[in-house]
Image (cartoon, rainbow, N blue to C red; front, side, top):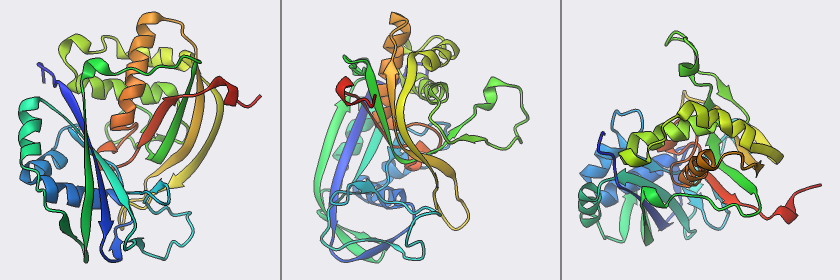
Amino acid sequence: MSQGFNAIVRFSIDFTPLSNIVIPPFSSKVSRTLFIRMFGKKAEELSSGGSTFKPLILTPVYWVEGGYFLFKADDSKGLSKPLTLREGSRYRFYATLIGRSSEVVPLIQDLNLSSKFELFSGEISVENIGVEVKSFESFTLKDSDGLIRMQFKTPVLISFPKSWVRLDRKTPVRHSLFPIPSFMIHGLAEHWNTYSPENLKIPNVAKLRAYSNYSLVEQDFDIKPVTAIYDEKRRPRGFVGWILYKHRRLSRNLDSNLLKLLDYANYIGVGRSRSIGFGTVEVEPYPATTVKQ
């Protein structure tokens, strides 16, 4: 880890089911299945590694026509109905891979270019594969109007960090149902420092996370708690929705790191369990004229 990694590669994969296909209640399992079948054994190793932060992050399946990611919640309508991919509809998922070029290039070279793949009880046709390569040096978010909007598209699981106080490891995880800036920035900074080159690492995470609570001021929000159904036993409770922050520029150096982490969130998400599709977000500048008075 000491030498860091030098790039992030983001794949967007569009596909169409050739028949109706019943899928698990949290559709990132579909994304993982397809990604492994398309990219081979190395992709499976990346998605099942035992490190704290996995180098492969997969989103749930996005229904293009419907405009949302597919997952079931305890409090959603039609709970008894299975989640189903519809024949002929267009779907998409995203896969973000962090690694050196020597690791990423062979993975792409081994890509199975077949247009059709088996998926559970049916078959899908891959329509398009998009690839975006981004260096760590290029991350930043431009907010010329001073407003930043974060949209939480899949359930966000933000925990109160145990490392901030001395607690026993057996202490139960405590999730926040509101996007507190310091909690999000803490997780983003730790992830960033795990993979970024040495010269780009954030030197004082504690200072930056504390600063974020003063720099990012809530202007408006629509946040909804949600209990996701991941499998037969696990029902993690988080939140979805959006929040609008006023970015107060109080420190040039701290703002530089804050903005690059907010852009980084677009690729890796926020909160816990990002590698399996929780915490998918879209962070972008927002026009000042749209703020409610």
